[in-house]
Length: 170
Picture 1 (cartoon, rainbow, N blue to C red):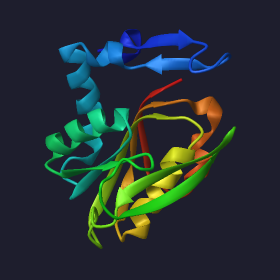
Picture 2: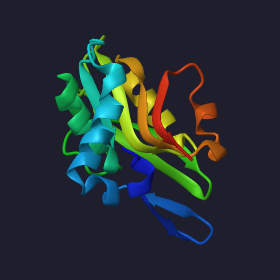
Picture 3: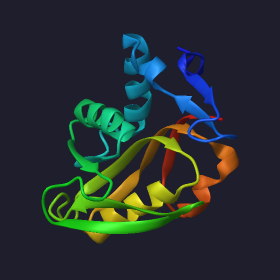
Picture 4: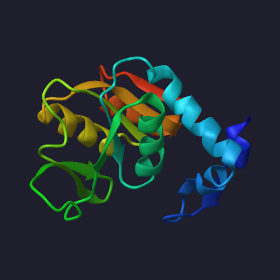
């Protein structure tokens, strides 16, 4: 299945000059959703992954389905103030300021094998912050898996030495 043909490009969103790759048009199709999850999960099946960490918010959709497919647990990484218990926090730079991600301090046990899943690898800041959180809690980062990589934004540069897997590249 050609997944790209089912992804809608929305010009000038969230701001002028940015093209947003909308995966909701892909996920609403049962075969598109299944093919997406199959593509994200296949390289990690049978690799001893204990937890899949999904980054807010589309990473929740993809990550939870990947976790179920490979027989792993699922943990959400959220924006600040969304988790109800004690959290570890990682702040990262944006082109227009700073943002942060949080993870419950007991979400990952030391030595657990962890896969991070998200919809898009763009500039890499969010993914790098997620990777730091996983490692700060003692997780063994198996790798990061993305449905889409925007290669022209060089997000891989913020993840040196990490194993990255992407399904689609733009």
